[in-house]
Length: 393
Picture 1 (spheres, rainbow, N blue to C red):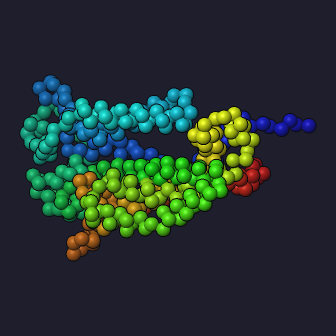
Picture 2 (cartoon, rainbow, N blue to C red):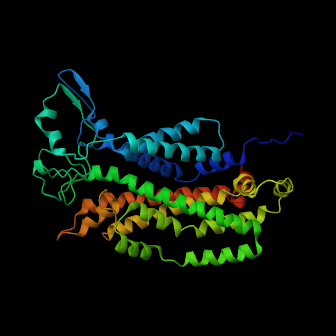
Picture 3 (cartoon, rainbow, N blue to C red):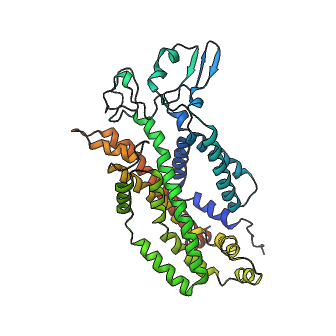
């Protein structure tokens, strides 16, 4: 008689393994990874400045000299994520350390990073930057707000239409390179998706956790609050705030986050209602542990799986909301956005196909990728599908 095989794989590791086996999820993770890479290294991928150059034997890096506070913060925060991933901390400790260290990095960058206030991109095509020993340009040698006035740009031009100047995705209405703007627009889409979902997740966990743990009157009042926020039309609220206070990316993040937490609260409430009677929770209560420890240290890790599904769909929804607002001409002004570029496809008398295909395709692929990831997580945590797969194995 053979001994039964006892798996020592943790629940989180099993969910992650099952998720990666989902159909198309490898493509989804690859696409999101490509977006993250483009967002983090955007100044080095698309810029009018040389990455490195040598003049009279002196090597310099104009790109590093012109890095903004945002560029430095994103680069160092990305390196911090990699470092924390390699350190032996729990997920909760990693998140807290990341938030703390990221805030310190942002403050130091704001104090010490002082790039030139005025950047004239035409100067980087002058003789001072052309007559050098050698220079290394980015893959897309145009900045997102370099309108190529010195090159006689005619505004909207199809790919490869400019003689002597290669624009793989054409140019937009002001003459800027579309490929460069596509790369830098990844920051808008990822930041509004992740930060807005993070705000909604934080509110939803706290409110849902309190409802599920206490139930009774707290649960009833909490559910009425959830129903109120579910009835708020997010898009129209965004339009109202834009009309009164102007266009701001941070305002969009806050509004989308504050109006999107009700779904997360329902998930957490349902899980906590099931977990509150478990023996380990009762032991934690009998041991006199504080409420925050019971809710977030003991109960939340055991009920977090359904949230992964909701978060992936929530990120996709936030990206669509920003793209819709930008398409209506009410998005961010001083930064490139996919929705903003999509709006230019139908602005002139003719249909500008490249302004529809490339930004529209990026929006579609990003939302599609997050939906694939969400469905893969949902299938991985579904006990019926999990038992069925194990029986077939």
